[in-house]
Length: 358
Image (cartoon, rainbow, N blue to C red; front, side, top):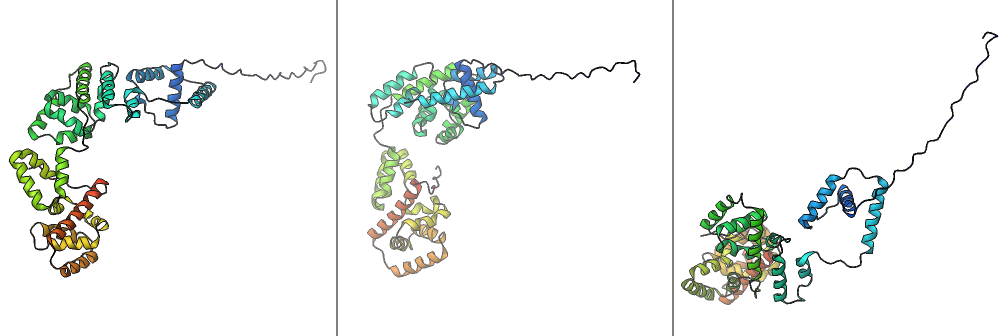
């Protein structure tokens, strides 16, 4: 460095610590908070029954969620904390809607009072009558398809879940089923208000029906009685029914399940389950009594052919040594087998094959 040059001082830049102030927490409206909670729960994989909310609430929630963008973590924490605090403070919750209230009070108020409340609620334009109609069992809805105009039946089928609609359509006579199915194709231009009014009218009609005194219909009750009746009594009653009402007699015959129906209506894989419920002496008596008798023998052979070979061989040996069976003993033993099959069916362990339409 030349002697006439003065060295410059070294300059050290000043270091400053920059502190970023936290973003101010957002102040959210109750509707925005609800949208945040729903979004958070859905993100966590929670299944929310949002469809049970009134439609205008569902629409408002979806609209609010569509308007929102980002929520900072501090605001999210505050909303979740407030939500949990409100949940913790709840002491008692009431069911939403008149149906929930009536379900809770079932058995505590009279049937007439419940029906009056349902009629009052069905007249409100804010309540969708189809929510109650679609929840009814098929046997309550079938008369509508049978007796109402095909256009009304078509609207109802269009509102029902596909499985229930198919079940109901399958219970209609062929010509009626075809007419209703064709009418469904013509419902594309029906406006929502008309559909709502049809639903309200059907619901009012259903609510006006008197309470049922029996869990089963007359066909099922007569069929159940004849199932355990002696064969002579059963045949005599069926002949009398055919003379009085051939259509009703035909339905009763379909509801009857006797020993002779076993091959046609019991699945082969279910035959071994009978041996678990029926004592072997009764089983031997029934099978021995069926030997050499048309129809009955086929049922006996069906059972023997579809159980283990070892058990079948043992039963055949006992049948050969059984000798003659009295009619009363035969009836009682076969009734025990039918009762066992009905028990298995009622528990859902087996499903009987339904008789084909004649």
